[in-house]
Every structure is written in C-alpha cells, then in structure tokens.
Image (tube, rainbow, N blue to C red; front, side, top):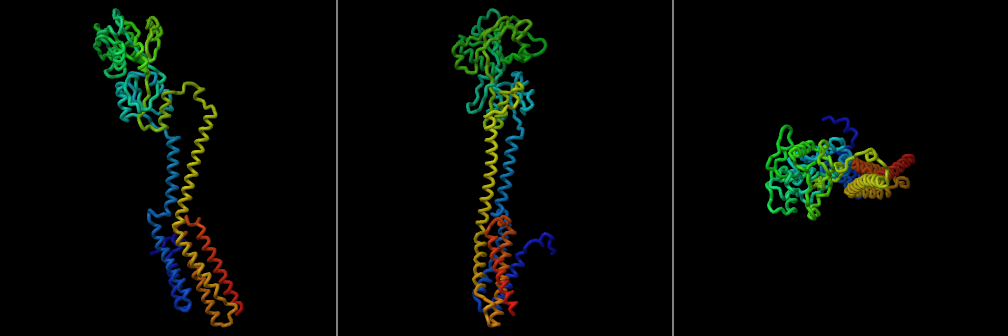
Length: 462
C-alpha cells in the first residue's frame, strides 16, 4: 500500500528496528570476541523495540501525553465561557407579577431596555410567592402580608401600595362594618384585612366578599346596597383602581383611616402615610381632605440558587436608572478598585492555567525519564567502549583494521540511539521541551564526530 506524502516526513520505527537488529547481528558475527559491544548492541535493539511499544501506548485516548493539551484546551474554553457568561451574555429573568397591580413597576420594566425580564402574569401575590418558592420563576413581586420562606433573598421596592378603606355613611369604623368587600381571597388585600381585623379586635368578624374586580370593570357597575366597607391594598396610579374609587365616591362612600395602633410595629410591611386632598381624583377631589392611612411594602423575592450576576441584574428592578447623572459612569476609588480586582483575578486565572499546563508537561516528561535514562546509559557505555580502541598508535595492521571496523559499528549504533530519541520526541511533541532529549543528541553527535576524526586520521596515515 502506498504511503501518503505526509508519512515520508516521519521517522518510521520499523526501519530503525531493522537497522538495530542488523547491527546487532553484524557485531555478533563480525566481532565475536567483543562481549561488551555485543551486549550493548542487543540492549540498543531492545530499546528500539520498546520505543515501538511505548509509541503504541501513547496513541491511546487516555494517554498521559495528551493531558497537557486537553487540560489547556478545556481550561481556555472554560475561561472563555466564564467570561462570556459573566460579562457579555444577557440572561433572561422570569418575573411573576399580578396582572392588576403595580402599574408603575410595569412601566419601569418597559422603559428600561437593559432589563431582560419576561413578565409572567399571575392572579395575585400568593400565587407569585408560590411560584418563586418552588423555583418556577426567577423573581416575584410579593405584597407585604403574604408569607414567604425566610431563606429566599428579597428586597423592598421603592414603590409602595396604599391601604384604601372606604366606609358607607353611618358606619363609623371598620370594626362596625357587617359586610366588607375586598380583593381576591387569600391574596394581599385579604391577608392585610385579616391582620387589621385582628388588630382592631372587632367583636364579630364581618362577612367578607371578594368582588373588587366587579367595581373595576368598564361600563355600568353598581355598588351593592348592603355593603358597609371596602378594604383593598392597591396602587393608586392604576386605572382600574381609579375607576373603582370614582364609583365608590359616587355611591356615597368616604375614604377613612384604619386605626391599627401599636400592633403596626409587628407588621413591618406597614408604614404610616397620608392621602392628600385630590390625590385619588382631582375632579371631584378624592378625598376632600387629607386622610391618614397606611402604605404596604411590596417585595422583590428571588428564587433559591439565583447566581450573583442574575441577582445584580434583578437589583436594577429595585433601583432603576432615573436620570442622566445616575446613568453616567463617574470614576471613583471604589469603582477603580473593583476593576483592578477583576483584572487581577482574570490574570491570576491565566497564570494558574499556565502553571497547571507546565506541571502536566513536567509530569509527562517525568513519565518518560526511564526511556531517556536508558538511552543516556547506552551512550555512556558506547563512549567507554570506543575510548579503548585506538587506530593511530597501533602498529599491527590487522588490529588497526579491526579497531576501525569496531569504531565504525559504534558510530552506527550511536546513530540508532539518536534516532530512538528523535522518535520519542516525534510521537510526543511535549518532549521537545525536555532537556534529556537534547543531551542525548549532543552526546551522540560529539562521540560520532570524535570517531569520524579517528577514522579520518587513520585513513590519512595509510
């Protein structure tokens, strides 16, 4: 079978084996009295055959000499992947958001193009809390009063919703109401209502109806005649909330305070506020005078296991950029320190990769020390054997010719040793950086040059 053009540039070990075997036979046949050279030629033949076995072993997929290159490739790929994920990839976040609340926060998400957030509309805060607790969404807006597992990271949003209590004329307080209308059962408004009722210590709990959505619909809608109070926690900027407020005012309801007392200290999501005159509606003004009330915090809750980079991206929902001065990048000592720390960490990773690569190269060279030490020992033996064969001071022509033949065979054997070292470095390019291979080549070349000078001087003398 014809060999490819590439194979002609490679050192084929079969030819070196044939040469070593032929030299071993010639030494044994032509110089039978020189036991040292016979043993050395046999050892060289064994070394070249062993090189073939080692080369076959190096072709295995899990060979040691492949580890440095594989490690370097995987480490660089991992570094590139880490750099891309950490600095360039825009990861999408899923955010559970009640479809009827937090209108201002929805506008914030739409107005900031740097936020890659997919909104998942839910019925209310309780469903949002369930989704984020089970890991079905990355983030969730959860109104205060809804239980959330304490292990989940959370941040309070700058926008707070307001407690809106409307009482029918003749009903002095929420504790005196017999029928109270609120939002969806089990959601934020209902949860806060139950806490307030416990705080007011009403003698009898009122009948609670969850029909707030009927007041927010467009078109004609009437307020139930038997209704005494309406208690909801809403975003006053929402159009649906404004529509329901106008209907309640038209039916004679008035915005009232919710006297909770000292128990509000335990409900940390509550904060005292004031609804100013005309804040809910300018014409007619609703309320007609400033009314004390409570604001309720809304929390951004993150699922367990969210990466630091995604948490940093999620924090922009809490603190969006609102003006040019905040959007601009102003150099500072802290920012410069963080940048330098990032650069230092990046180059530290590169240095560690380089050290790991060099360590594996050293381990690879260490694995071949036995073969190179064997070749080095053979060169030493051949050096000792040829040093005893002189061709200039010998007067006997027969002995001089024998010594010349001896030295010629030693030179050929040195060439075989040099070929074995070259074959190892050819099959494992990492050994090129091993000083042992250079030492063997230099010693072989020096000895061959010394032998050739002896033979040349002998030829000139004749």
